[in-house]
Image (cartoon, rainbow, N blue to C red):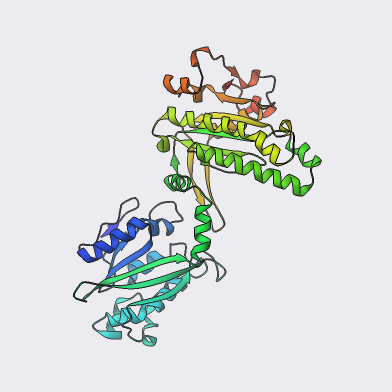
Length: 401
């Protein structure tokens, strides 16, 4: 049976293995379960996402031998070892080979006939093992030994009578839990979940926020390099916190600013997404005096420009690499949002008509906005309009909030 992209892996029919699978799924393990014949029965969703660069859940041939031709060939498409796609799989096979051989009734001859030919030469060097648990490692996403390392923990699954029912294989990055814990605790769990929600790229309606520090070039010339760096770090932390607290997704940092997105699928309504975007912008603006004070600067030296827009057709997703993970979006409306922000000189918060008109009457009232009293101005007619705004988004109508 082939479990396709987007389909959840069914629980094993064996109730003992099903209990293990449920527990592994609930705690978010990277893990696999095979039966006593080493046929692949279950892979957690977190593991499948990791095997597809966090873009989508990779398909899997359930019921096939873990080291047979079908799974082995499929492993060459996973982010394991770009320079030698079989090397890591051979490391994996070597780590569990003793257990696998002990479970193969026909011994080495049968095992050689079952596994993929690229692994068969390793069988003669194996010795049966009856260990209840083993550990090992293999290369993860990377082009060499300097790439990522995955640690393996292999656990035998037995029923109450001691009969072997299968094997669970758990993976984790080869860093200590204190490191992983610190990385996770320093980030907002909700934001991590929202980032995972847009892991699969696609068209998503969303509110868009561009915010940037005005006069940053002059400020960089005034301050020492270390002081300017410290100010930029405090500013970025403050802007990110405001976005996260509003339920948004931090995208990329451009210069001394931030790009953020508020997808409808996260907020469940267009109005809620638009309101969260406005809240985040106002909160960032309100946070600047404190940031300035911490930097020993007068408040007027940390002034942000804001451009808020609605994206009906933007293409959004999470781009993950070995070094970072970033939510990004493409589309004309993203470019228009940037043009709006560039026109918001003097610390203005400019919001587009498409964004404001997503608000329900109730949400507009909560924000202190009366849409019927708003007068919009096209970007090209603003006294602060930039050449790029006149060229790329002259007809986009905006108002000051």
